[in-house]
Length: 334
Image 1: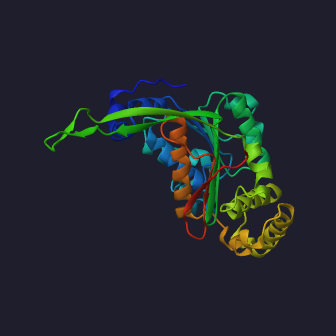
Image 2: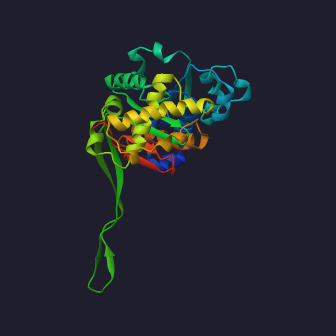
Image 3: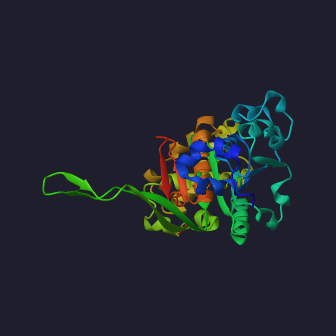
C-alpha cells in the first residue's frame, strides 16, 4: 500500500474533493493501488475518473495493439499510436491527467498471471473478459481480500458488477437543531447543526454466484430488470464462444447467433417473451463513446466508494437501459 499522508501539493490539488468527501476518505484514496484490466473505450473512461480522484497508483494491464478502430473509441490515444501496445500508448495522456499518481503498464497476457499477482492491489477493475476469467480473478481477489468490480459496454447497453465482499461503509447524516416554541410564541434552538457518522455493512456474493446462480430469477425476484440481466449474460456468453463482442461488420451472423441464445434462455429460465424482447439485440453493436462515458463514470464512482468506504455502494449490479438510457440497480446472486 502507498503512503496515506497527503502532501501540500496533493492537499491543494484535491481541495475540492476533500471538501466533498472529507480528508479521511481522500487519505484512503491516496493509499489505494488499483489494477485496471483493459484500456479500450470503457477502460479509458474508468482510468480518467480514477486518476482524477487521487489514488496512489494505477497499473494498466492490456496486451492488445492499437488499431484504427481503437483510435475512434479511446481519447487517450494519438494517431501515431497505431501498431503500439495499447497500454503503453495511453501512458502519456493518462499521466497528464494527474502527474501525482504513479502509473505503470503491463503488456503481458492475463493468462500468464499467477494467483498472487492480485494480492498487492486494493481493488481490481476488469473490462472485456470472459465468464471464466471474471470468476477466476474474483476468486483470487477473495483469497487475498482484494475488492473487485467489472463492467462492459455493448452498443447502447452497459453494466457493472461488483464483489466488495464484506464491505463496511459510512454515511454522514446531518441532524438539524431541535427547535422549541417558547411561551411568547418565539422559536428557540438549543442545539447546533451536527453531523453524525452512520456505519453499516453490505455482504456481496461472488461473481460466480452473480453470473451462474440464476435460481432466484425463476422465483420472480428479478422482474423489472429481467431483460437487462439476461441480456448481459447473453452478451458475455457470446464473447465466451467467439472471443469478441458482436460487431457491425458481421451483424447479420451475430444477430442470428444471439437470437439462438435468447431462445435458449426463454426455455431454460422460463422467461416470458415480453420480458426479453428480441429487438433489444439490435442495440448491442460496437463500443459507443457516450455510453462508455456513462458506464465508466459509474464504475469509477463505485471504485471511489469501495476504497474510501464513504457512501452506499451499488449492491451489486448496475444496468443501463438501452431504450431509455436510465440506470437501474439490481441485486443478483444472493
